Length: 181
Image 1 (cartoon, one colour):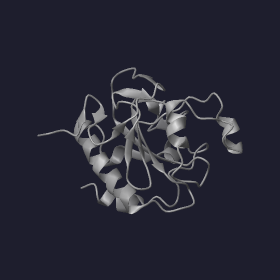
Image 2 (cartoon, one colour):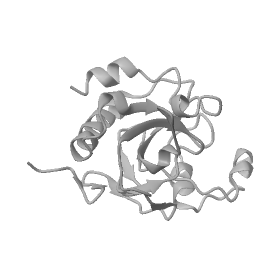
Image 3 (cartoon, one colour):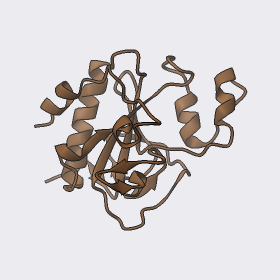
């Protein structure tokens, strides 16, 4: 069987190689976290999400970026509105996407999670292209990392409930999860 993920890198993603990652403390990959992101807020198709994860965001480019100065964050994947897939960190490494977080009593979800960002917001529906890419990517991840089951897929809001709201009320969990099988 041919795997779409080899040594932590998805063969169908554009590889961007962020420096915002480190080693996982135990090599465990057992959780998938869904996020949303837009920079500036509610604006899509800008270069700023990529710039943020690559560590080269010009914080003077928009007033709202001043709070991002010096922040080092990344996700494993970003799925843009047109379904384009970028990968920033190997799934075998720890990306910095979840922050202070807890899943089933276990803290520091970055230690054992893969993070997928959807270009979007809490206030607008996601695109069909994003769902198609997300379903395919999730199936590939579940094949490569069998500890990730549908019960171990969660939203950022579920692991950091007092801090985060994403992927937000417009993310269709039923649609997404029903297409995984």
